Structure formats: structure tokens, C-alpha cells
Image 1: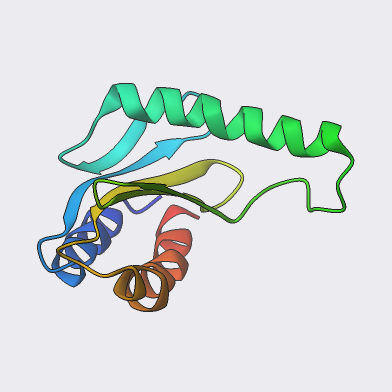
Image 2: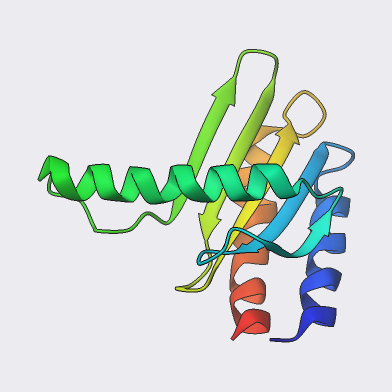
Amino acid sequence: MNLKKVNEILASVEEGFMGGLLTADVFSRASGMAVASIRGNPKACALFNFLADRIIDSVKKSQLPLPSDFEQLMLVFPQGVMIFMINLNEKYRWGLLVDIKKSSLGIAVSVVIPEAVPELREALS
């Protein structure tokens, strides 16, 4: 893992969200503990990691014709904030809390996240 590169990518992501990034954490899927953060939230990492695992288990048990793992989850809250949780690889997830009143959903899903994901995956390999 190139931790310096991961932190550089997160700094670039913060810039790309133009003031809308509230928090971001790259964390272990095994432990839920962050390896890199911007205004990190260790409690959120652990709890949302647990939630992601429960969602994966629920999808498997539901027998819906879906893949066994998700690529990206988005949770929208009426106050204008979104949580993104992205599986980067078998070992790491990336969680973001974004104020979509300051940075649009389009910027998030069409620009910032798609540009950062491959770079994070490479830096974490």
C-alpha cells in the first residue's frame, strides 16, 4: 500500500467536491478501522462497515439475481447530504459524507468518484 498516494488522492477528492466533502475514510473491510482520512470518523467506519457486510449477507440470502458484493452504495438524507460507500477491493472500503447542496450529485458520481476509484485501487494494491 502506498499510503502517501492514498492521502494525496483524498486531498484531490476534497478539492474536487468544492467544499462539499464533509468526511472521507478509507478503511479496512476486515476491521472497520481507517487507514487514511479527511476529518475521519472511526465510529462511522466501524458501523458502516458492519452495515455493508449485513447488506451483502442480505443480498445473498434473498436469492435475488444480484452479484454477491456491491460496487457502490449511496444513502440520501433529506437534509441534502449523501453517504457513499465504495468497495475498493477485497481489503478496503471508502466512505464519504458529502453535502450535495455545495457539491452536486453529478459532480460526485460522474467526476470525482469515477476518477478517484481506480487511483485508490492502484495505491492500495
